[in-house]
Image (tube, rainbow, N blue to C red; front, top):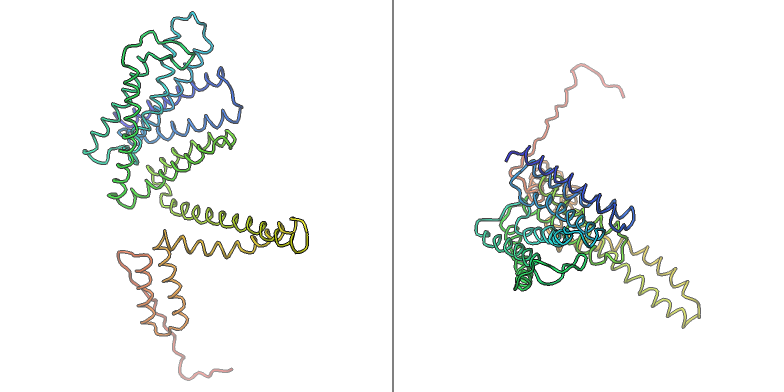
Length: 387
């Protein structure tokens, strides 16, 4: 399949996804215009990134999943609307209810089972991981089949399954248990790829892992956040996947991680200082002068304001020393060279130290120093200088 054909199919899937979500938004229970818009943006993020990557690399299985997952969820949502608003005598209602249940399984099961195995380039790390891929496919298939033919009532509309067969529920339960080791295999594949990959692969995986952690963290506290922010967090993963594939500003993830570590630790320390200040100063003032806690709050605020910059500098040095040793050593080498530069007057020795500092900090394949020769013109003979 050529890239243009694959791109047409992927963009067609995106258009169909938009149509299905329009049906779901028009007839389903609405959570507000802002939530619907952000949910649509999140769905579009997956589909658009997937379509763009498919047009460039039609063999990227992860990009196809980015296109398929929103479509399957859209089919499930539209089918749910059909079941909830359709009459009980409609003969197709049970079949559509089955589609509604299995759509969620396909839309969520495939990415969960295969994501770790396929990041960041949509291919397995090596042929040795094919059994893991077959196990993941078997788990998703068994879970879907067990749900379709299970004896338990269908979730959507509380309809009983007329095509239930024995032991289908047990098959679904076994498949659900297998999903856990499949996910662990995905983590192992990502770790193996990270340890055996080059600098570019490691940067790609860092983007994706940071997006996963942020999405998971926002999902945990999602009940305390507005729905638009919760839905908007879904855009983090496709955005990181797009950065990893197209390598756009790939190395900025180190800056993001470094600043996140610094300011998270800084906020935690300042909060502890503020609370300790309110408690300690308030206790001293109440015992000494019997004053209210307003003065304690004011003094604690001033203490935090004064401690901000020194704490930030110390935490930044600690983070660089622990997690960014190369940057820490480079800054120390540059600082030492700057100190020697003030005292060095020998040009040859200065050139040698400059090259040594560059090799230590930047670590280039080769380094050389070119000095421009400055010729001082001679004063013509027979002339008199008047001062």
